[in-house]
Structure formats: structure tokens, C-alpha cells
Image (cartoon, rainbow, N blue to C red; front, side):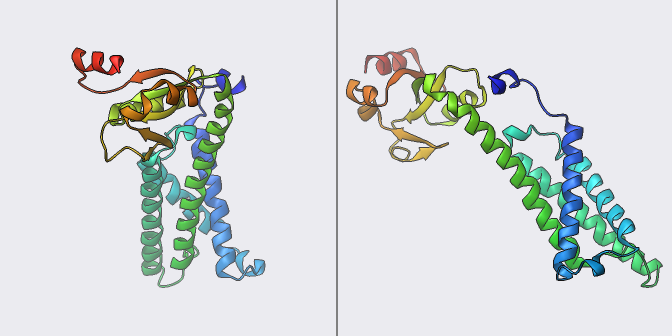
Length: 239
């Protein structure tokens, strides 16, 4: 399949940065139109190139410092969102500083002046656009690879702790793996009945019986418990 064939190939980080800057430019245009009631004649002015250059330069510096373009888009996580927030915040600060310096040294007359409202709306739009597109790509990617689940082997992960969560994430991120984790097994009452990473947590007494396993068509159980002694492992296998 196409997804499996390109699973080990990633988009160049410089192309990601270029896309981000194009998105910044579009967001700045939208922010300007919003504040001018979509009156194009007020937005299009001789100062547009200078102001656009300031915005793009500020966000370029912010993204380069924060490294928001270095993550793998289809595996976007919380840390990637934090990088985008950090880079955009740096850019907003640079724009405000440039405005203040331009106003101070230009005595109120500067083509680089960007209204704070425009800068703030642009900041919010950029956050929404960049994080939203990344999450959309991630959702689409996992949506596509989930179509292969029909031919995969259903498994339960014994252990809903950190190790178990890492195991499930690893299975999901590898399109070529033959397993589909349909749930967790854990003896912690506070976790039973809840869902982790979209998979339900079952108690050992409920999950470890032939009728339940047949209902979910579970073929294997993956042990994923840290510091599991041989005795505990035998007890789980015997059950």
C-alpha cells in the first residue's frame, strides 16, 4: 500500500517551514480584512509589502528559535503544539517591539506599524491554522492506516501503565505491524472501565476468559508491565 511504502519517508522540515510561513501570510491577510470589515481598498496600500515583510520575518525568527518545523507532521503531539505556541509568541513579541521602536524613532510615522489588534488576531489565526492542519494530517494518516485493521490480529495489552501506553502508541505508529490493540487489561480499579488512547481498560477477571476473548476476537495478549517477576508472569499466563 502507498502508506506502508512511504511510512519511513518524511516531509523535509524546510518545506514544513515554508508551508508555515505561507499560512502566516494568509492569516495576516485575513486578520487585516477582519479589522477593516473586508474592505479590500483599506487593506491594499503602499505599506502592505513592508508590513508583510515584518510579519514574515518575525515569524521566521520565532519558528527557527522554537523549532516548530522540526517535528513529524503525521505524528504531531503536545510538544509540537507547544513549539508552535512558543514560536508564535516570540514572533508576536518581535512585532510589538518593532512597532514601539518604529513609533519612537519615526515619531509616529512608520510604514512598518502594525495595529496591535491585527497582530493579536493574526497570532490566534496562526495558532489555529498550524495546529489545526497538523492535527488534520495526523487524523487523516491514522484514518488511512486504520483501514488495514480488518486483516490484523486483535490483541489485548496487559498493563495500562506507562509501558502499556507506549506499546499501544508504537503499534499505531507502525503501519506494517500485524497487531490491532483493542484494549488494555489492568488490575487497578481506578483504571478499569475507563479508556486510554481510545481503548477500554478491562479487569483481569473479565478479560481473561474464553467467552470474552472470543467476543473481541482476541488472538494474543501482550504483556507490558514494568518490573514483572517470573512468578507474576506465570500467574498471568495460568489465568
